[in-house]
Image (tube, rainbow, N blue to C red; front, side):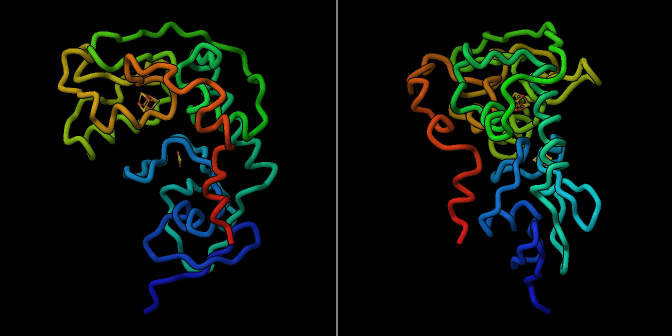
Length: 235
Ligand code: SF4
Ligand code: FES
């Protein structure tokens, strides 16, 4: 039995390996499917839904859906673009994201996605929730105002660092990233060299004393749009 299948994305037929997700197969083919909670070093959980595609006419999270022979996938349609815009919009208003003051500006995946989708201001009303800042750790800050609940830190701490520093706790609007059962970050075994300290897509987990080392204007997404590295391998 062949270990490859043929799938179609936006009318383009590509070959994919069995066991790959739609997202992985698209990446290999140089087709960018936007994503946020997904990270190549972590097990996918399909939580943010930014990567939603239409798969044989049904919405699916591309980061968790495995490829199958003959799948027909839509990625860049006006409806999907609007769906992704709405999700990004909601993330902005549910937290306190002030890009102009944020150390992560230019390296932030949420900001870069907003730029890619042409969002200059959210369409929903800002919630201005009250969130904490945990500065108790000597080397790492945790600013809940900027968290988008992607759980990358949770997975990185468990899967890559062999620790359990972060957990997703609470429900609904109260949901947040917890630290070893509501402890302060400074009371945990978190180390600045942990992968969890580097994997946050926004400015929620940031390292102390390295802020603005790279000037604004010279950061990753100041120079190239998010996804362009994947589209750059398109043949
Ligand atoms: Fe995601 Fe960062 Fe929040 Fe962790 S702290 S859930 S990595 S946004
Ligand atoms: Fe697929 Fe978040 S990237 S659900």
